[in-house]
Image (cartoon, rainbow, N blue to C red):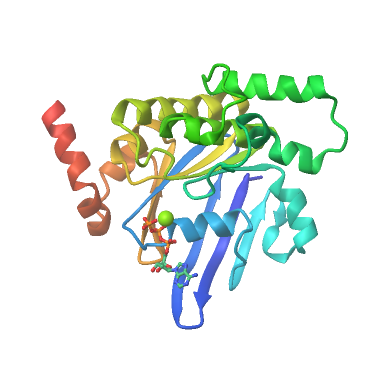
Length: 251
Ligand SMILES: Nc1ncnc2c1ncn2[C@@H]1O[C@H](COP(=O)(O)OP(=O)(O)OP(=O)(O)O)[C@@H](O)[C@H]1O
Ligand SMILES: [Mg+2]
């Protein structure tokens, strides 16, 4: 069974078709990146996969359950398996790092002993390579540290899936590289199925088992990085031209 199976997914607004007839499967533990021009529907697809939006038609089967058919309460249960590291679902400014990381844990589990909460925070901060920042406020952290805390928060519930929307945007290349490494480590060490929307082609090619390309609301390719670089598809070729050129310069 695939971890996620999407079948003939459509998402339409009254005046506009946003996603058109998308089908694909994700295997457990794989890291799949989604690239494509601005407005091609990447964020919309992530929102559908995580149940934040409801499809117009089609199936989104998560570990055997079609989440498109679930009630909000049933969907909440499936969402517990999903970590979200979204660009704009940033940290809560008024909460400490400690309370940010535990936000979902405290909401979904009653009366967790204080020692266990402390352990969760400590373990997740270690996992993302951060020291003793739990009593700081988000505004006291750099952008890169905030992204790490966002990942620590996603890890707090031991998710089977993590969805990242542009996790390295706005970061310098070195910090972006460390976030890339964390995405891969998290995927490998915790067997997390990871979906990463990214505009940064070098990152996409470094971290992904497979790469999807969206264009005008359609999924035009989904294959290994190597296959994608060799693709004859004109849209894919045009989009990948900068990556191909930099590879030719490197070798
Ligand atoms: N609530 C909405 N109302 C109207 N149009 C919307 C809405 N949400 C998304 N769209 C449109 O859907 C299309 C896809 O948007 P989406 O945010 O998914 O693109 P994207 O690939 O994530 O782009 P970017 O790379 O800029 O983040 C765009 O044309 C956008 O204008
Ligand atoms: Mg987007």
